[in-house]
Length: 81
Image (cartoon, rainbow, N blue to C red; front, side):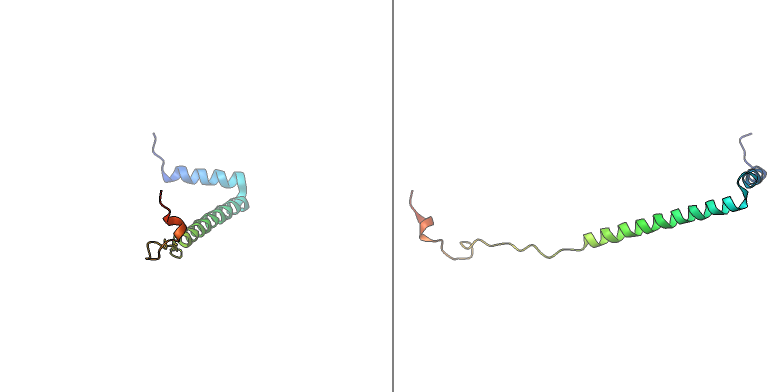
């Protein structure tokens, strides 16, 4: 009990062939193959999009403070309190 031998699988295969016929089984296997191919294509497309997104973008350009660069601020900013 509990063990499944090759004879069990053969009987199951014969019953499936009788119920669905040879054409339906091959059609079903073809559909399964198409599904697997579509899944693989979707995964490769996702990996390609992730690789493209992971590419380093242009470096961020910053606007330096003119006072930090040694240029004096206009006189209006030097008001005494």
